[in-house]
Image 1 (cartoon, one colour):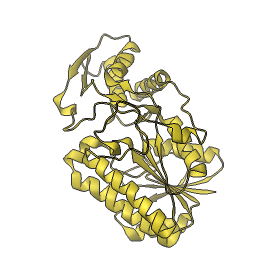
Image 2 (tube, rainbow, N blue to C red):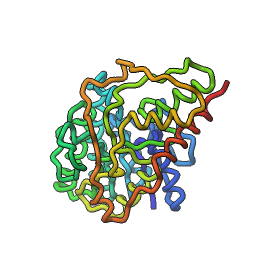
Image 3 (tube, one colour):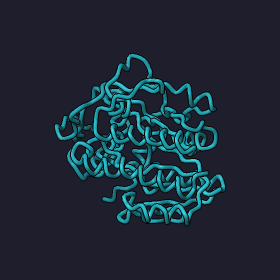
Image 4 (cartoon, helix red, strand yellow):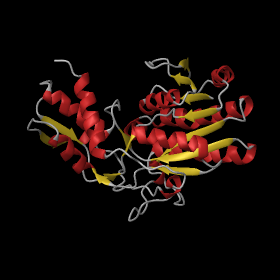
Length: 310
């Protein structure tokens, strides 16, 4: 089995490549020229806005399964650079899907989307895949376009696309551009004496559905094997956790007395107050999250402590 991870240098790509190799699959990975890959794989530099390069990568890798992870994935950056976000996420998806259609139409492709697509809807109960998305930011809009375009290509050309709306995933190695990693990174720096004992935060009153990245990868492998063509699956824990409680947990794991201050630069122009996944659809395929959030936070803090040198 030959697996191609498009956008494999990022957070999830590292874990996915490890899992695929562990399953005996031959792994091919694309990355940007500015990125690096430290794990064993056949690596291609790829810009999704270069259709000829996409064709070359697909021809050389001849994949049985494609995992489309490449994205500008920061909501904050999508507000700051909307054109860049649309170019990578939307136009890039068009180019990739066209490449698949012409080069390897028999390949299965898992298109990884985001819970941000749902937008500011009624979250009084867990949101299911039947809910009509109402994207509330640039990143969410481009990811919804990516998903809907995959559905169009699946229906029009018979391509074997399966889509996800993945809720927040966290764990060791995650960029500190994301909230849990940022809390852990700031804490590790404080412990190492690199900064004053203050953690700066954005909005602590929102609730998010967090899943360990290692559980998320198990979900992706399952969907690549058993997901139904043209269908979308939520990937999330089914639990909604307040960001303030995440921060309390991080602080409880440190021996230092740390003060908390709000940083206006960390607030987003539009924020969804609560997000929680209805995961019955993917659970019916046999997936359940297995790693407790406390373990994930501890592992992430340990990772950032290990990156600090005094």
